[in-house]
Amino acid sequence: MIEILSPAELPRARQAGALVADVLQTLKSRTVVGTNLQDIDRWAETMVLEAGGSSCYVDYAPSFGRGPFGHYICTSVNDAVLHGLPHDYPLADGDLLSLDLAVARDGVVADSAITFIVGDSEPAESIAMISATERALQAGIAAAGPGARIGDISHAIGSVLSEAGYPINTQFGGHGVGSTMHQDPHIPNTGRPGRGYALRPGLLLALEPWVMADTAELVTDADGWTLRSATGARAAHSEHTIAITGDGAEILTVPTQAHP
Image (cartoon, rainbow, N blue to C red; front, side):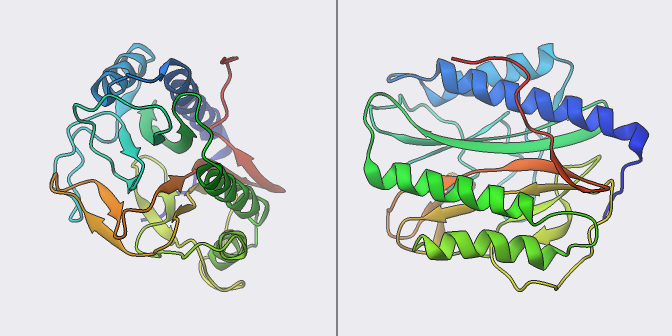
């Protein structure tokens, strides 16, 4: 299913995007050495519900997970890259943490992810990997607009990731959003330009470049949800929800508040 929002619906999409972005940035500012992943999940739940949003994850039970997910946010640490199930784990200095949040508000979904290093350590390889996903995300957004095709976005993302030296997995990637979290079209993180679905104003897309340092192979954790690198290498993930407009793409998951 592919939904196209009317111009009158876009303000609701902006509100959903701002909520997701503000929650993620607040969680990042609160997360320190010793913070437990379960605390992050509880903080996310409180903020989402107090803002009048609802979780896209709690009851989510797709074929690739051992559902329902049962939590408000994905917390992926170090070699975990996607769908990290919050559990009793206090974060250590230097841990690489990805937070992925999808929320519905007033009938519209927004989805975003950030990756950052906990504490004062600054591992150069991890910083470079985060930077690569962020640059790939911006390249994908720049390639989006009316008349462009999904392959244009995928090619832009994949070019940045490949040039940075990272293997690319195409099992999981970006996707459409609307009244539900995962919709068509699928947006792999590499592809051929000029191919695929033609973008139209009102289309909402979640673009999400992610990489693992030295492999494209995933393994599923014993919890049935958390996806890890097959080699134990670290991973990073960046994501924005965008709206295709008449002259380009608008990033919806931008914070409205100042965060430390």
